[in-house]
Every structure is written in structure tokens, then in C-alpha cells.
Amino acid sequence: MTEARVVERFKKRTIWFHWIHTASFLVLLVTGAILFFPGLGGAAAGGITRSIHRIAVVFFVGAPIVYFILNPKMSWHFIKETLTWGKDDIQWVRSAPDYYFGGDEEKMPPQGQVNTGQKMWQFIALATGVLFVVSGFIMWFAKDALSSGVFQWFVIVHDIAFILALLMLLVHIYLGVIHPRMTESLRSMWNGKISETYARNHYGKWYDDIARRKG
Amino acid sequence: MEITRKDFLKGAAGATGLALLTPASAALAKDSQTRQGMAMLIDVSKCVSCWWCYAACKEYNKLPETSRPDLSDPPELSPEVWTTLHPVRKDGVWVSRKKACNHCTEAACVEVCPTGALSYNQLGYVQYEKEKCSGCGYCVEFCPFDVPKMEKTTVTGVAIMNKCTFCHDRVTNDEPPACADACTTGAITYGKRAELITQAEERVAELRRNGVEASVYGVDEAQGLHVMYVLDGAPDLYGLPADPQVPAAGTVRDIFKWIGSGLAIAVVAGFGLNYLVARLRMRREVK
Image 1 (cartoon, chains in turn yellow, brown):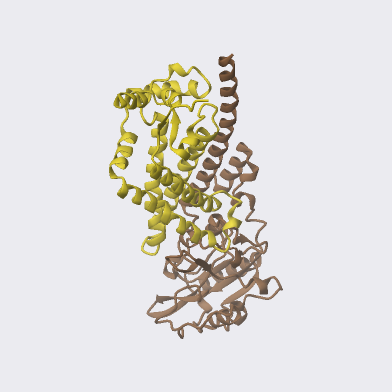
Image 2: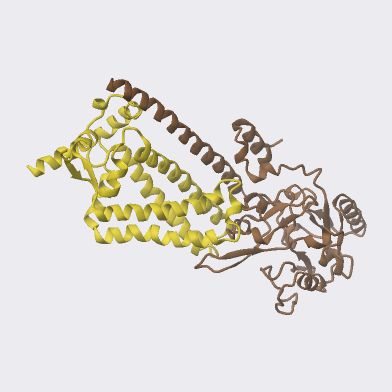
């Protein structure tokens, strides 16, 4: 049996970053959700989850900072890709519902390294990350300096970021792990590689770029 | 009539049928008419600022000593001071208003408490179970009377709230709260709320006959306080807000909780549908 030809999708350090960030975010999500969803609050009694929330946030904030320092070029590229939107993205949004409901693969415009849906997720992750960190930092350290009225609205900013991030995370997990079409997504975030076929079908423009550079 | 937040939440509960996600506030749906219960009446015109209520509170609740209280420099409410005297300069002399938790019928602290540490006791007061406190501090920020106080370590986030408990152990054994028991002049009365309202109105009428601009505070405020006052001046002179409310942000939070819960359920249900349809169509295509 010949081994399927593969292309590198993620570097080792990106994979490390992804999972450290994931782990810390899941801890933050759970220790936060118990204060948000009615009826779960009992789990927060005693306040240990408050300390866990604070320990997790060190990794949640620290991981991207370390990653950025070690890979400034890749990080900027990531941010640029996230914020650059073009005609293909509009076409993608139009075609996506049919595609994700099992429609014709050929109707999907060819995508770059990250597709439009992934850009949306990355944008939400960046935006809610900023909202979370700013409002959280203020509620943690500036509580005594703030008037109650201002504090209350920062709680709500944290709530809004929570709802957005939770919904998009659910979508991210569903598409990455469960959706019948995304067969290599999870594995690629483990070993960094995807098959050439998968790359051609899912990230056509990106695959052509790599193929051209290889010559 | 305006639609109250209670009505809104009840309506929302019915409309969405998400009974499991009913916020604590709606689950504890209460009628201020039936939840009269017990209360205290503070008559500022009878208070002589002797500080016995303060001392009795400290002693009964085993709170550590703080500085010797004095009206020129009164202790603020703190984790170790659950009741104090609010100094008021009136007609050239210092008088005071006993200050502690007012035990609202619609209490902002209970509405925002995520753990159920704060709840409505059937006797009417705001019950506090300290062991359930998570230290989130929402009650501190939402209370319109600035009553709950936090003991906290900023870096670790370890925190716990403290406030007047209405002497839960005493009142559930048919004894008045320690402060009311200790009052030397009858400025603090403990009793059935309905009877205290009558008593307050009679006292106000008496004061008015003597030419004093008296009024009762707490009959309707926050749907009815369980610590009411006979005042001989405007509420704000005595450090009481004219119209204490659950802050708007509290209502907004409740709405967001509904939206968040609803969307999360809808999205997950959508995944199920998406999976089935996508699977089916993809299989048909392969054939």
C-alpha cells in the first residue's frame, strides 16, 4: 500500500499553541458558564472556581503573546488573512449553506489557506478575546476604582463576549470534529498534515500556490 | 401599568418553554402582597445614637471589634460591620439613621446572585448562606443601598461577601434580631410587617401633629423593604435613595442569559439537522 501524499498544514508550534489555548479557554468557559447559566451557580460555591478562572487566564493571555514573540511573521500573516475579505468570500457565503448541507462540492469557490468560515471564526476569536481580556482585566483589578454603574456594564460586555465565543466555538468544534465533510480537520490539528486530495478539495487556491512553489 | 421584570421573565418562560433554564428570579416568583412576613421599623426620631444596636450586632454575630464608634467618625459598613449609624446633620445637630441591609422584597442582590447564596426567606428577609458564596461580587455592585461588602484578595480572586443576616438563627426561633432586642429607646421595632406599617403610619401622624415633616420609607420601595423607616426629613438627607431599583443592567443580564441559552440550544439542534441532511445527500451523490 502506498502512503497517501500529504502536505504540511500546521507547524508543530502552531499545534501546541492551539491546544494550550483550547485547554485554557475551555477551563475559562466552564468556570464562567456556571455563573452565567441559571441553575449551575451552585458549582461556584466556595469560590475555588474564581481562582481556577484566574490561573487559566494566565495561559489564555500568555500563549498568544509567547506565540507572537516567537513567530511575529506568521502571527501578522494570520491577522492579515483574518481581516482581508474579497469577492471570493462573498461567493463563499452564498455557496456555503448548500455545501455544508451536503450539496455539490464543485460549486464552492476555491479557497486560500483559510476559508471564509474560518476567517469568521478567527475574527470572532480575536474580537471576543479582546473583549474578554479588557473587560475581565478591568473587573479583576479596577473593581474598587470603578463606580457600580460602570462595573455592571463591563459584566455585560463579558457576557456578550461569552455568548459570541460559545456559539462560534460550538460551530468550530462541530465542523472540525463531527461534520461529515471535514474528515481530516481534527487530525491535521494533531499531526499538522492533510492529504493532497483534501487540500485540493478544501483549499484549492492555497494548494495551487504550494504546488507552484514546489515547481 | 408598566410591565415589571417579573412579568417579562414569566412571559419569556412561557413563550420559550425552557423551564429548566428559568432564572432564579422567575423560579422564585413572588407576590409582594403575600410575602409580607416579618420586618423591622427604624424610627429615626427616637434614635439617640447610643450604638447599642451596633454593639449587639457585633456580639451576637461574633464579629471582631473595630474602633470605638463615634458619630463624628462612624464606621462604614464592612465585612466586620453589618450595622452602623449613618450620621446626619439636621437643624444644627447630629442625628443618625441605623444603616444595614434593608431586606428588599425585590432585591437586586438576590436577582444577580448566581449561586443562590442570597435568597428570599419565607419570613420576607434576604437570607444569606455564606458557605454558598462564590465571591463574584455582583451583589456588591448591584445593591442600590451599597450594603454587601467584600473581603477579598485581589490576586488570587478569593473573596467572600458579608452583610446583615437579619439574625436568621434568632428570628427563625421567634426572637427579634439582636439590634432590635438591644435598642434602648424603642427606635427599632421588630414584628409583622403589616402591623409595623400601621404603627409607622400612626407615628407619622403623631409627628405631623407636632409639626414635624415626617414620612414612612420602605412601604413600596423595591416592592417593599423589610427594614422600614420613620423619617423626619427627606430620604436623601438620611442617605436613602428616593427610588431604589434593581439596576437596568440586571434586567439586561437576565435577557442575555435567555438569548445565550436559547441560541446555544438552537445551534446544537441545528447541528443535528445539518448532520442528517448532509449525510443523506452526500450518500445519495456517491451512489
